[in-house]
Each structure stands twice: as structure tokens, then as C-alpha cells.
Image (cartoon, rainbow over all chains, first blue to last red; front, side):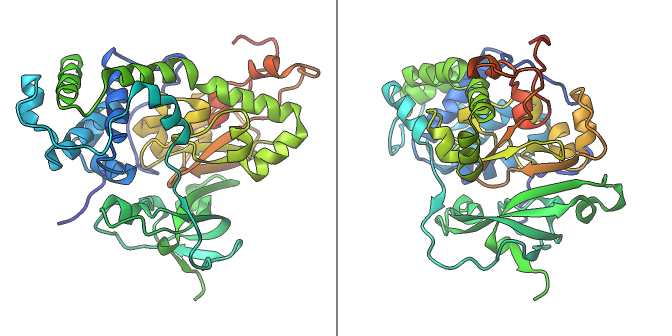
Length: 221
Length: 191
């Protein structure tokens, strides 16, 4: 089985214009705020983590045709069906047809402010020294991996340099697959525009990503 | 979509997974409490108080928390400062990562394929779509939010607002200027 993300868009030729929007133009349709809240409330049940959620979204076959809140809903329905929490026939019927599964917790209205204010920090205590130092030249992984990852395609196999060391963080690739948090050092890695786009790049362009340690190798081993 | 979302809400409520009152509270939070005016307060304070700007540069999460803005999708904050030599722009090419506690929900264009694909490759072209043209000599730094660090751009303080209060300054700070697709408004220009 080959894992395919439809969400890895950096540098690709995507049709359409960028349409600026007023600050108070938050939602486009009455269903959008309800969809947002449903997804946040189900996320708060602890049935999946944010990396599993991103993986479910980016692998939707019709990702490119859906609006963002449609993507959120479709991924939530997929995650719930996988966990036996809800089946498609129940959405069609508009009512519960199968017994509920258990969830770890239910978000109550009174708890919303503190749950949002707390969030879900991903930094973990350092358990090993960082492999790379600020200023060091590194090369990013070139190979495709057969699972969720946060190394964008346009930065694969590229020469960059370590700009910041950001502590050890939950490793998205492992967490998305249910393999635990497996924290790794997280680095901010800078690339010169030329290294990414060749002569097309305008002078003075630098792009950075945040990369986990296993995405990187020393440039001059 | 309206019918489908209503059906979902009914089923999830009947199953006991969600509390409809919590949905109302979530929506109210992002409509009235958490939005780009939070970030504008951070920027106005950075413009007014050099010690706060220094704190923001060294530990943005703590400095921003001191104003009461913390949590979901802003757990690990980094502030980046525009100046005459360098302009910063933030994108998430892989999804739609965005600093919610200070900017609220991302605008549609931020989540769209055209922005996510072009920001890292042709940021000057993107800026032109927002009516912004920078001098050729200004370097551009694009931050692709690929992990759980969230970036807030501190735009340049416009000329002509000397002696203004933080409240007055905050009115000059647009959401787009804190993403890096815009500049702070000049005093006297239309909101």
C-alpha cells in the first residue's frame, strides 16, 4: 500500500486566485461554525490525536475538490467510522441507528475556556543530546515515506542549515500512526531560494521549515 | 451541507459524544473572544515597550501569555520582526496551521491551494495579490509551519504615530500584516 497525501502543495502549480478577505468574514454559510465546533468537540473526546486527524484529512481522495470545513467533516466521519463510533447510514438517517461506543471524555460548555486556553503542548523533556548544532549544514531526506510525514515534498533532498533548536517534540510521523509520541529534536531549517527553486528564485528569498531530527542528515558526513 | 451538519450534530448528541451547549460556547469564543485583535494588542505593546519586544523575541509564548493569550494552536509561539532589510511571511503548505490564540481562525485564502502552493515559491507575487510591493533590496523570509511552532509577524511600526497609545496603535495592525501578506496601516488611512 502506498501512502499518498493530497495536501502537500508547496511549490506546485495550483490554479486559482488568492482572494483577500475582510477580518470579520469568518464563515461562509451557517453550517461552517457548527462544523468547526463539531470537529473541535469530537477532537476533545480524545478519540484520536491531531496528527492522526491531519493524516485522515490529507488522504481523502477528493481533498482537492472539497472546501476546508468539508475536509474537516469528511476526515472526522472517516475517523469515527474506523473506531466504530458512527456509521455512514446514521448520517443519512439523521439519527442514531447503532449503539454508541465509549469516548474518553465529553467536552462540557463550562470547560471550553480552560480547555482552549490549555491546548496540547507538544514539547517533551529532552532525553538525549541534540545531534545538530545551530549553523550546521544539513541535507533533508530524499526518499518518499509510506506514511504521514511533515517534511514537505519541495524540501526533500535539499541542502539547508540549522537556524534554531526548538526542544524535543512529539514526532508527528509516529503519533499519526498510533506508534506513540516518540519525541525527537525539532529544528528550524533554512533553505536559500536557489536551493529550492534554482534560477527561478528571486534573490533574497529564504524559506524555513520545522524539521524533526530523523528528517535530516549532516551535509558533509 | 446544512442538512448533513445538522444530521451529524443530532447523531453525535444522541450518542453522548458531544454537548450542544459546548458547540455554542466554542463558536462564541471564536466569534467574539479569540481573533486578530488579540494579536494587534501584542504588536502594539511590542511597538510601545522595548522590554516587551525583547521578551517577545526571546520567549514569545511567555510574553504573549502575559496578555492572556494561550493555548490551542498557539502552544509554542515564535514572533518574527519585520524591518527595512527583511520581510517575514507565514504559510502552512501541508495543511492550515495558524496561531489561533492571537489571530483566531484562518481566513479562507490562507487555507487555499493557491496561497499554500505559491507563498514558498513566489512570495512577491503573493504580496502583489494583496496590493503590497516591497523594495527589491528587501529580503523575504517565508516560514512554513510544518510542526507545532506557530509564527506571529510583528509588522514595522508606521511613521506618523509617535506618541500614540497602545489602543490607538492596535487599530493600525491588520490581520494580514501579522501573517506577512500585508503591512500595518498608515495613520489616517481607511480601516
